[in-house]
Image 1 (cartoon, one colour):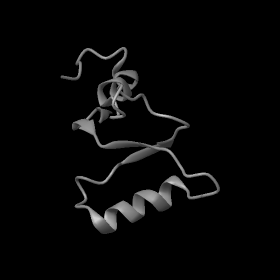
Image 2: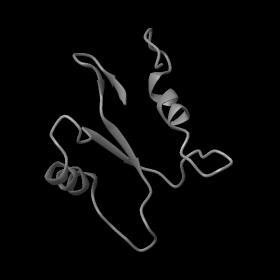
Image 3: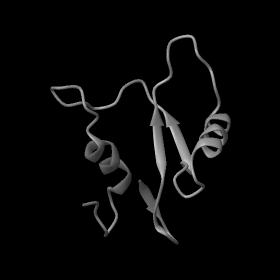
Image 4: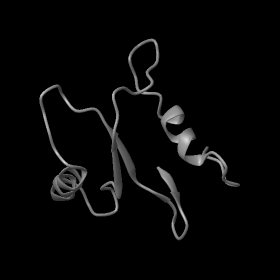
Length: 77
């Protein structure tokens, strides 16, 4: 989730593409809308090389979110 001025938060995704694969963020968001309800589909998307993970390999979602909430009065829980 990332801050949104009207709704408070908006669904956001960070994606790691497999090597040799190409897709635009618009295409990927459109694909998710065919499988998810509109409110669950990401409103924005960023391609990244890696995501922070724990020792057992789980994505550390709080660390992913923190960079978008820096400088805001409201903090994530």
